[in-house]
Amino acid sequence: MLMGVDEFFGHDTAAMLRMLDNPGSCWAPQAGSREAVLQRSLKKAVEWPRNTLGPSTAEWRRGRIHPVPFPHAKGMQKPLDLVFNRGPLPIGGDTDTPCQPAMLHQVPYDNKALAPSLRQIVNMGDLSRCLVIIPPGR
Image (tube, rainbow, N blue to C red; front, side, top):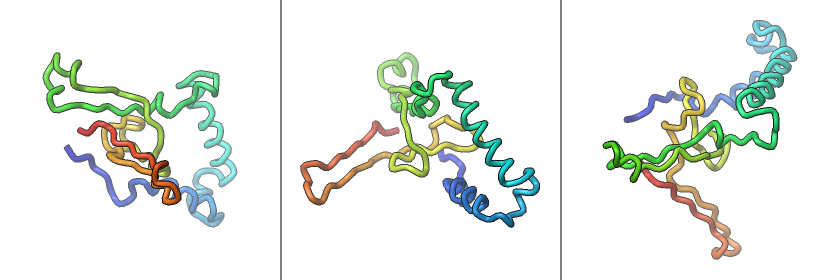
């Protein structure tokens, strides 16, 4: 199944930063003011993880709210799902990081839409220190 995305997918951070950088933007007065938006956002940025992940910031990990499942074709039939499917497993990252398991705004933190299938870091100065990860596929 293909998930629906549009031309704005993954560009929300850049758009938000452009709006914040433009004091003449029409959205700021509608929201109260630029400062009011920033204050509400900062408050929510602390309240939400505290309510969801607990009061200790040491326990705040993106992988706890953004797991990735690894279903297998044979796992579509019960009880084979217990043998062949893996996860959901914690995973970090978003559209602004090298590990890009993005989320759809309609279902935040439900990582069934997009995830990297291969990532690598190539050390051209010492090829023996290259890193590659290939997660299980769908």
